[in-house]
Picture 1 (spheres, rainbow, N blue to C red):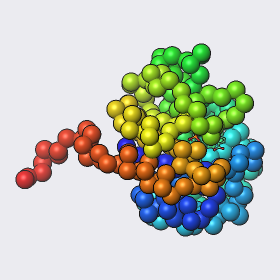
Picture 2: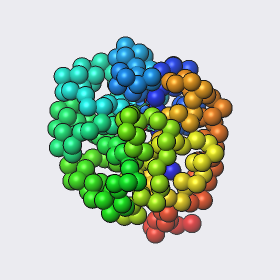
Picture 3: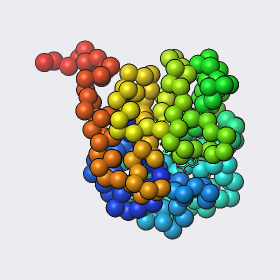
Length: 227
Ligand SMILES: O=C(O)c1ccccc1N[C@@H]1O[C@H](COP(=O)(O)O)[C@@H](O)[C@H]1O
């Protein structure tokens, strides 16, 4: 299981995430968010991220000219579209800056079924997404709400690797380990205040996820390896 910690604003928190072995850190480029960072802040934060750890740029309905300014200022690895972007818009925007991309779908129990979620995922897969992120729908916010959705709505046979988000924390993340997902993403569940991470909560989250790193491995031994 891979782990993305999102919503960083403090250099010391990024350094703690790196020490704990998080796979990715997310920076929020959405000014209404209490976790939003400026390009100047983000440049400093991303420069502190070591090799082999990804920086994810989270954007919400960002225009192409802003995205170009972002990519020209901040080093990052992958874009997370967390707004109302269509599959075609995601692909067009991401290819204009030569980046891979993730799309967040906001899951609403009143509208979605596992089949409808799967069908939506297929559209983003066909457009060129690298993964899909499933978060809880909220009528008044695009994300970072701390709300969970009904995990029974996660399709079993997704055409893209699934990143599960929404209301995760060190207490409930163990229950995700048997779900058909590739990664977990958390923001509020590792905070002491919006945008300020809590080192003890980050550590507890990593312990809960990574303790069984090899126990649930599904890869079989390569047949050409001698013992
Ligand atoms: O964090 C935000 O403020 C935010 C704003 C707009 C879109 C997404 C945002 N955060 C992302 O939402 C999910 C779930 O967060 P949480 O763990 O429930 O707090 C995650 O991907 C955040 O990065």
